[in-house]
Image (cartoon, rainbow, N blue to C red; front, side, top):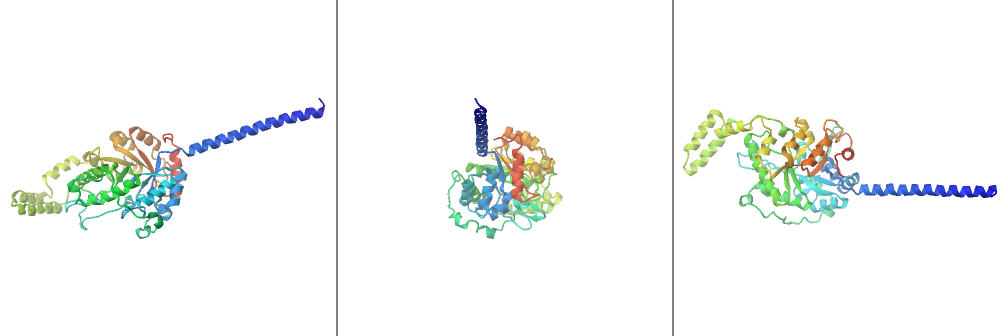
Length: 417
């Protein structure tokens, strides 16, 4: 073989080797792309509490939901309900946008203060308080960006959102809703919750959470709210959903029992006298007035004072509420603010804690003060069903905070794929 032939043969061999290397590179690239595509289709179990980005939802609901899905969120907890609408839209319109983005609505945060008789928890100097709102009224989900309040929603403008897509809100009877006790039909609380629960059932919600009770509650108020939550739990279960109480920091803190003032106690006893006079039986009721005038309280209330002494509102609610009707959503930051260990809560209340708010000082997992990895791992063991990221105080625009928080959480070893 001459030199030219040898050179040609060597060049041909080099070309074959190069082609093999290029082929391997293409194969590796194709494999990497296939893995990336497969991973992108894996659904995580991390959702977002929409009050985190409520202003963005208000301004551009469709684009915001699609962007949340692109980030990697797969489930939603709604947070604004007013006048039968969810984040300013009919249930059907909002669900359509979520479905289009590939997001599932699994939970909703609702608040409606108890409406009761004169002695109920919401009857004060201003009379009965009728609330139809969310945790936003306490600052939940409303954060501050450079000192400005983010997420304020104007109801009068909300009707304009996707007006063409909303269509007609149908009056649909939800399965199980007909199971109503006779005394529920005239209960203003049931009337509000019935409509709200039917609306969120149409969204596909599995869990309904509530965080509000009367401000500065007495022991009697707390007892009333325990009964109220039991009723909500029953109404929710009738629609094949579960009700959760979301305690705030104040509800977690130990407290001394509070009883009605002497004036309130006497007024209540005098009301009983008037009622007894109608029935012709005043002796016992008049004695209660005299007792109330002496110490501003009643014997039964004193018994409850000893029983509830140094207990937190959350502990009393947990004891008084039926385990099969009232569950809990634990907020990690609210617990930290109250000095409560979430790990101990998970151990103590076990399967009653079915939802978690992954909530930090600012972006989730960045303060270094909360062991989110251990909490999530323990929560999975004890029966937590869904976890939602929540941000209230913003270092960056809310959507950026939502994205950073999600990436931080997805990096935790405890998060399942």
